[in-house]
Length: 115
Image (tube, rainbow, N blue to C red; front, top):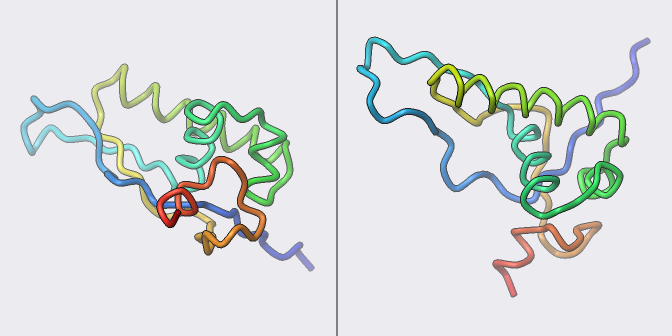
C-alpha cells in the first residue's frame, strides 16, 4: 500500500498567477506551469531568506522534499526567462494555512495581513 500523500502547507496564493514576456503574439504563447507549492519554496527561500530546513518546517514537509521542489521550481523559472515563455502558477499538492499561528512562522504572509 502506498504511503498517504502529505499536503504541503502554503501561507498564501500568489497575487498574480501569470508572468511572461509582454511582446508575444497570442498564437506564439508557450506556457510553463509552476505549482503553488513550487512557488512557495521560491518565496520562502529566495525572498524570505529561509534555508531548506526552515522551509520544510514551514511547509510541513521534509528538507529533501523541499530540495526537489525547489530545484524544479528554479528550472521552470529559468525556462521562462531564457526561452521567453509564459509562467502560470496553479495547482499542486497544497493546503492553505489558517493564518492563526498554527505552525506558521516568520514567513507567513497571511498572518502578516491579519495583524
